[in-house]
Image 1 (cartoon, rainbow over the protein chains, first blue to last red):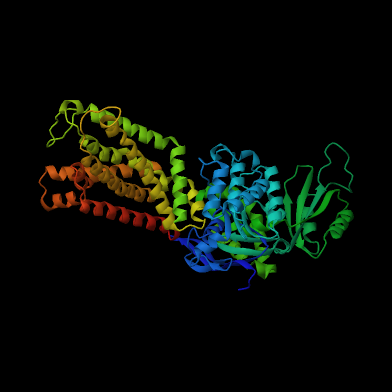
Image 2 (image 1 turned 90 degrees about the vertical axis):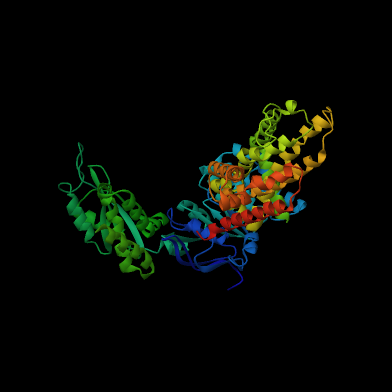
Length: 381
Length: 254
């Protein structure tokens, strides 16, 4: 194992009774990397973090943190990391300063080092105003800051943060992410979150987990390009209302437009987006290399339709996340809502299911995602 | 060692930062005073012979008869209920255990803190014999031998009882459940010996008397330091701490 691999997980598995929370996951995090650990609720993010921080033991596989095995050298592992669990569980009856001192004492920091570290932690976490206050009187945002403070007090080379921004307001979030980038320069940070914007703002790399397996791991650009799709949005006028219709002849029918757009070279799918009765908005999905806009424009001009809008969207991380982890959501719905509720959701789900079918055809990389889609389809039928 | 001390110090502060320790110590002192002066003593073969003023003897026996049941009923359950159960419930245990500390240090630190609260309570009760027989009042010539023996008995009894409380606290995530389980277990362990002594249950009775805290404790109230009882209380403590340790460790495998 190379020296600069700070976190290393190999075939890590964890089962709770018959529930398989983690299914042989493998990943590495190198020195100086900030990695976003993404996934829906219950995907295995916290379980992985708890194994890495030696709170629980894996059922199978092994993990090393800073070169130490989490099972055999758990004290050394814990010495080299700072951990902020979900919802920052702190001792409410202690004051902020007392808490920081308690954390420092357990990490055997001497008084002078503590004072120096506390000063910098207070500064970066913005705790100066609340140092003497009891933690029970602090807002959730401040509690999270204190939690981060205790994780940083010993200046650890590795930080593991479980949903650190869940209780912060938008300003605090932005500040926190800036700060994360700053401290991440010389540290290794593993950060779990549901919020994709945060990952895009602070991480260069993401690991997406779903149902205890890793479905994507790599630089954000690579993950974004994973499905290889670009989306075009075209809006065509279908009724002029009280005003004069500016196109040739009469406004086109919805079916007619859909058919014509579908025949364009490079279009893989045409979908209708919600709009009002005067215009219809269509979503075209294509391969990334071909730019559909000239062809679409030409078609519309030739037909003499009135085009209200035409633009291109790159696939967002959110879309990729949704398509990779949609199986989880579907499974949850089936467990909780029977028959009718599912029927009501069907329309909405169709698109996603079809998207996943296309993934399967075009990208061998997304085998996992399409496996999810298949399972989802089977479950539906 | 150092971690045990750090954890114990934090827990002890937490006890005294909340009203629990004050209510427990103040309440016990008050109840003890009422029982001692106003309620008839059962000194001779379970026959009521009158309160402290009626029996007309310089003795603290009654205090040592009352202390263990009082401690079993509410002092020790209240002190130990939060040690692990509340930490598990609120999630603070996760943060504590992911710091570089051994599980055994967590258990011992919390055990030491709980014992310290109980010892502070026992030390406060010294106020009664001192106030009555040394200063400011001199109600008679007190034989201090049985008093010290009683205290040694109480201390070892507390070690074992706090161990039982810790163990039960480690098995649940709710401090209320921990309180009632500990209270029921300790009162049960105490009463079962008194019951077995008054009814002829044969071998079962002997066995119950053997495990009961009250039979073990009684010799101390008579001024006798019984090493068998000391060994018994210490053994119970060790077993309970081992079970707590295993129970804390079991989170890894569940």
